[in-house]
View 1 (tube, rainbow, N blue to C red):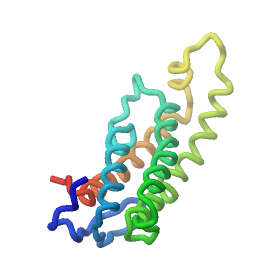
View 2: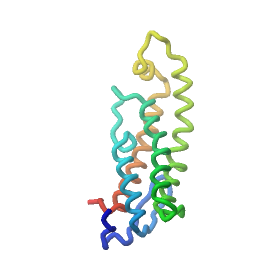
View 3: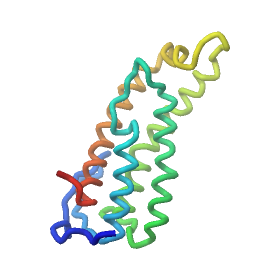
Length: 164
């Protein structure tokens, strides 16, 4: 892996979920972890528009849930040098999971599961989910979460030196 560009020694990044701004100092492990996290976040529904006429909210929840496993793996592989302080790659990633994604999942996974348990064999998953009375509320909260996670993705891009 290439070393971090000299111009990337320090960047100030805005963070989501009320985490404020931090001055992040790059090192090779942090840059690599930020890039890996950026790829994961930027290629999932968490930062991409959700097409409510075709998409299943259950799939969006699954994608969000998988970010815990992926983030843990990236941080484990990067090692302790990525840190856990609020201004480190690891600390920022953990903060995003615990302050943003976890509360959303805690609320909506159980709500949607209760609705899915009522599905009859005569209706498709898509049609059943489209009839969920809480769907508009969850879509609105998903949109808000996506906005926050786009802020995080932008920070990861800046941290990895790929931001334009």
